[in-house]
Image (cartoon, rainbow, N blue to C red; front, side, top):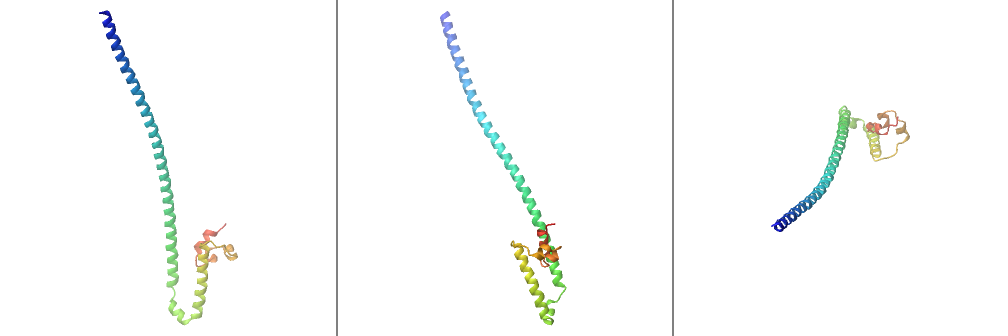
Length: 153
């Protein structure tokens, strides 16, 4: 009976050791998978955080650009109102009929100044008068707002 008991104990010990080995191997494999998943998750979180920061910067830049465009739009409205007020003070048809030479001279000068505005906006170099101008009207009375873009003081 002693050998039977020893045999049974050996089989039970073998089975228990096998179960422990299987449990240990299975646990190690799960830990390996969990560590890999954790590394992937950390990478995904870092990528996500970088994307969020990038989106925040992009939003701030877009907001800044929008504010600049709104400011420029406000300036353009102001310029249009100034021009409208200038034109509203004169009856150009009546003036052209009574003093065509004067109107022609004024329109020719204004057209030349307006053309110069387009040249400046397109990147033309400043001439001596524009370099020495002290204010927008002296710079170019058709586009005095450009003076601020070229002022060096």
